[in-house]
Length: 271
Image (cartoon, rainbow, N blue to C red; front, side, top):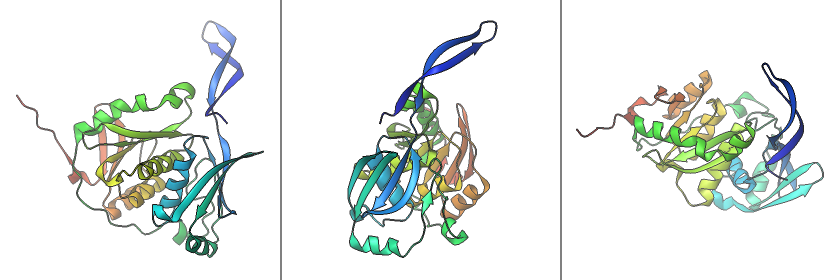
């Protein structure tokens, strides 16, 4: 399954010109079923690319795995109605999950679909370290470089991007998906599979900062999350409780700091 599909039935309307037949590229969105030791666990809607990264990132940020060593293998298996991500995990993990009844049916990376209680949905935060310092200009440099990391968005206009940025604002790694949570899970999984420490940089996402996005960032140990759109109230509360620096409305020449302002500083410019 390709990450984009051609759509030939398009009619483009232009003022003063009327309609004309054309074609377009649209982002692929397919059901992706995660099975764990042959037991069904979750079905998410996702873009069929970087799925091994997605499997690891999702399992870690959702608390299914405690560390990367608990995931032994991932296979992508084509099925008639979509794709299966067949995960093999340690036996103690399977036993732990068997005691949990959570079974999700996600729309497009819906982070809380299927949670059976408020306690399960809103997990207590874990405190972050306070080691990172990021210049305001570094956030802006990362933002300026973000579009170059989004080839699928440029082709289809329908996907989100999550980028991991070095402290100087250079983008080291990025992942795209139709779901903003999926893109972040893919990125976190890719970082860990590459042996990178998420705590040594910051995250930039092309979406709003919802509670789930903050939760996943905190679980990964990231100290700063910048979003191009708005944060939600619960996201701000969780960021404050966890010690996460949360930025919203990150646009050229400006960004809002909702929590953790002490991590950001002004660069000194030599005369």
